[in-house]
Amino acid sequence: MLFQFSLLWSVCCVVDEDGRKKVDSFVRELDGSFPNKDSIYEYFVDTKTRTWIHWEEKLRGGWKYQPSMPFFKILVPTVDTVRYKFLVNTLVAKFCPVLITGPVGTGKTSVAQDVLFSLDREAWSFLTINMSAQVHDDDDDDDDDDDDDDDDVEDDDDDDDDDDDDDDDDDAEDDDGEDDDDDGGVDYIYDDDNDDDDDDDDDDDDDDDG
Image 1: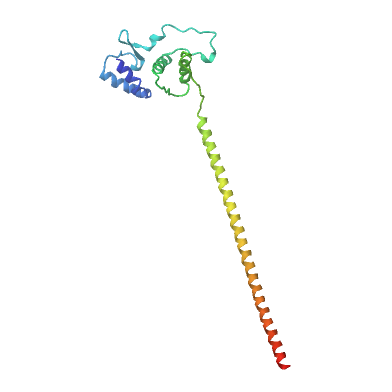
Image 2: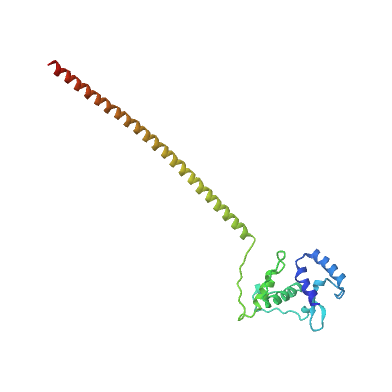
């Protein structure tokens, strides 16, 4: 019986309502020890009598409202809350991680808080982190903004590279122009030397005539 109960709340607990109906039919074909009323998920094992007991039996003691308790801590016991609180407490006592899943508004947070607040404060401590579906979207927006900033930086780098290339081209053209002017100066110096040689020849001719 304990193996069957453990099987239901380990391998067979990650199914929806339709899946539970299929599991119920399959398990009943293998083992007929479960009561016929309701689903096999509605029962737990009484270790003293070694029988299947309906979860509703845990609600027989009744529930009384405590005026001193804050409103947000009030949890009215139901079959679901009693069942899941028992399962979570059993796992936490064995230091096993617990993940409670389900649609919005099904009491997941209430069950978790009820379990945490019932723990021995001298032996346990807990940290609550509130998250929502918007957390992922905000991260995506930040990533998009970062990508835009990167694009802007790349554009600025491209503009700087273009400016540097233009400046280098202009400097190169100016250097070429200066070299041309220098070549022209050398030609003039060469011509001056020729003029000096011509003057020397004329002086020699005059001396010969004299």
